[in-house]
Length: 276
Image (cartoon, rainbow, N blue to C red; front, top):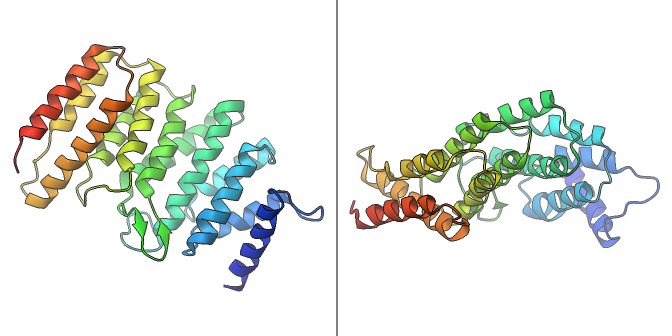
């Protein structure tokens, strides 16, 4: 607790000084401390100070490419992105959810300046995809502890991966499959704009114009495959989340290909007529 309080005061002073640090201090050393506390249950420290400061510094190029690559490797490790993976309703979600957000910001910078090697990117992709498949804690806002938002933060990271030119057609297909999987949530109905964030990632893939319209339409058609479990509430949640995602997609996509619009419209009509 003492260490957290010291970090809070340190980051507050940095913020008040327009994110500049004293001459005798190091961005790199402070960043390492921030990563150590990325999963704090104090939302003010975790979100308002650590993530905001980290994001600001990355975007403002205060770190060397080597330092960013080091932070990236730390962020995907067992103590960060994979920490407690598979748990539900525990505080470990904050570590995972904010680690994936740091990864997203580093990838954003990579997409501007290309400093991550192919080998490093493959490892990042592997870990992020594992996180996407295995994250079970889908809470949005947690009372007294702030945002968990694991699915929304994952979507931000998938969006940056989708924009990366080093990812091939199969990688983009995998991202679409993961978006489908996460959008068809069965635990509850998303109410913290997770659908909007997932749509942003999907839209980035469409804008790359790598996958054919036929393939995209087949992917969209999979959203009508609901009500397969036999459990009333599970099937209901899946159906509602599918509808929310498709509606968000409908109003966000630039329909240069009318096939996309026709496919989404057809599926929404089917889902809207359906009664559980």
